Every structure is written in C-alpha cells, then in structure tokens.
Length: 454
Ligand SMILES: [Zn+2]
Image (tube, rainbow, N blue to C red; front, side):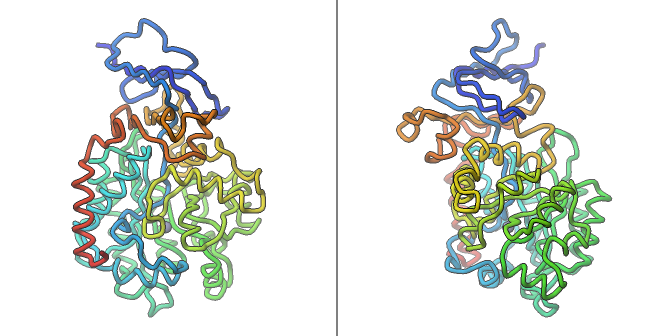
C-alpha cells in the first residue's frame, strides 16, 4: 500500500526556508503527515496513492502560523479595563480571574483556539498561570480543547506564588504555594508532555513574571524544567514599571534578575522583551533565549515598541504572539504580522524595520525556533510536518495586490481555504472541521456570564 498522497498545485508558495524560496506558481506533495516535495510548476506526474488533488489557483501556500504566547482563559474577560496600563490592568482583573474554574477554562480555550485555527494557526502556546484552589483540572481542559480543534499545543503551565503581602502584585488569594505550584507543574508534565518530534502536545514550565513569583519559584522551576527536558517560559521586560519594580526590589533590571535565577538559555522563551538594553539583547543572543513578540498587546497596554529589528540583527530567535485576549480582543495571529510590521516602523529603524517577508518569517519559522520545534515545523520543506495554510487571495480584498506575501502581511486578513496540521484538515473553506463554532460561541457567552464578566 503506497502512503496516501495529497497534491496541491497552481498556487503561489512561500516556503520560508533558509533562502526564502518562493514559487509564483508551484506545487506541494504531501505524503501522510509529511511534506514530500515542494517546487515550481505542476507536481510530478505518475505519483501513486494520490487521494486528494487540490487546484489552488488564486491562493498562497505558507507554513501554518505559530502563536508563541497567549492566555486562553482571558477569552472570557475581553474588553475590560481598556484604559489601563499593565499593572493597573492586572490589579483590576486579578479578582475576576481568581474565580475561574474548569468549565470556564474549557470554554475559553475552545474559543481562543477556534479563532486562532480559523485564522491559519497550526501550533499555539498557552501560558496558563492562574490556578484557583479547587478549580479542577485546568491543564486537562486546555489540552482537551487543543485536541478537539486539531492544532498543536505548547501548554506553558504557569504559576504565581508572590502575593501582595510579600511584595508581589497579585492579591494573596490569587496565588499558589511554592511547593504546590512546583508539584502541580511536574504532574502536568508527566500527564501530558510528548517529547516526540511530531508531538501534538508539549508542556513548558512557566512561572508568570518577576513581579508575581518568588526567586525560589524561578530557580526551582528552571531546575524542574531541565530535569524533565521541557522548555521554560515567562514574561520579561514588558513595561517601564516592571523595570522600576525590578531595580527597586532586586537592584537590577529584569534580564539580569532572570539570568541570576537560571532563566536565560536555548530552552527559554520570554514574552514581550520591550524594554531591553543593548546588553540585554546581547545576553539573549549569546544564550539563544527566544522572544515572543506581541505587538497588539504592547500597544493596547501602552507598553512600548519592542526592538525587534535589533533582536533579529543580534540573532535572537523571535516569534509572534497574540498575548491574552484581555489585552488583544481579536485573538488572531494573522493580524499580528501586519501589526508587527507597521508598529516596528514607528521605532528607530523606520521603513527599514521589517518587511512583509520578515513578518511572515516571525509568524512561522521564528515561532518554531522559539518553541524549539524548527526541525519539524515552521517552513515548507521535504521531510517536515505537513502544517500549512492555503490563503485565498483572488477575492475583492486582495485580487489587485501584485505580491502575494505583501497581500497577506499588509492586506486585510485573508480567508483560509485550507489549513492542515500533520496533513489532517483543521479548516476547510473558512470553517473549522473539529468543532462547531456556534456552539463554542454560545458556551463562551454562558461561561462568561457564570464568571460575571458580561
Ligand atoms: Zn502575556
């Protein structure tokens, strides 16, 4: 029995390989869960076992988009505290967040994943750091929602143990104990982490931020991650107030503080990294530490403009993240390509900051590097997993834009005709195949009502 093959032809192809190879009218052949070939013109004739042949005229094929930072549970608390900067926004929302439970998190994860997947995301990271006592199996709920939707998941099992009475930002009732957080994180790794190259679910260790966790949780969390062979994730250098907090409390900036607790290295990625000195950037580059760039959230919370061109020039791995939907209500990653490009041009490098192809690279190959998976996902190359998207560019919104990659990055969000994860269909003709969107929308509304946020 030959392996079942899918043939995709007549589309523009942006491979995002190391040479940025593109084909104006090319093809892809998929064999089971893998890409077998990609190239110019029509697919080779006489292939055996072809079960599906797609005429993708008018489309652009790209690697599936990779979201490197999110907080799925925030899907239920959107549109609140909309005139606040980060610390005031957090303080306003912690009381609401500390009432979440398993049915709420399940609904929120389904909503977040549905919107990501419908917009061409094939791998998503979720940083879940709030675990109210007695709230149930939140990690299991998130993993289950990802399996239903069909996208790959990196669940960063987050934690907070530094309540306000000990100098942290969150109220005491919103935090876990040090030992409780570490034990629950280890349980989550044992229950769900898959180390294989085609894994659908991976777990990372993810204390929340320098102002909500103790130095001991950072230190022991890093030890746990390295003992288990999983990645490490946290927030860093998001705002000027975080920088001030770290200087007052620790006598150093966030990067030096995180470095002092074991939090720089090729197995670490950090969200935001907006307020970085030249020395901070050099330290990230030297250690291979990755960055999840979240331009919409940084704008929503008036955090600042991340130095993405400088990070890239230094060789730092950079991916894109939507961040939690309480600070980015759209929850869509493809709009982050556009915002990353546009907002970076408001910074020091102006029109040379980013272009459409570099933005697409951040959203695909860059994200794969940040999540430690660039050997198997993030570009369209033979032997890689068949995680790819066909973007429709021949309708009113895009048909008159000459360059398909510019159409994707600068134009309106492009309709997704097909999205595949490991060759399995996740989106077809703009509709999710694994979940009922209307049912998900209803349940998110019901659970937001239970929480009291709508
Ligand atoms: Zn975040």
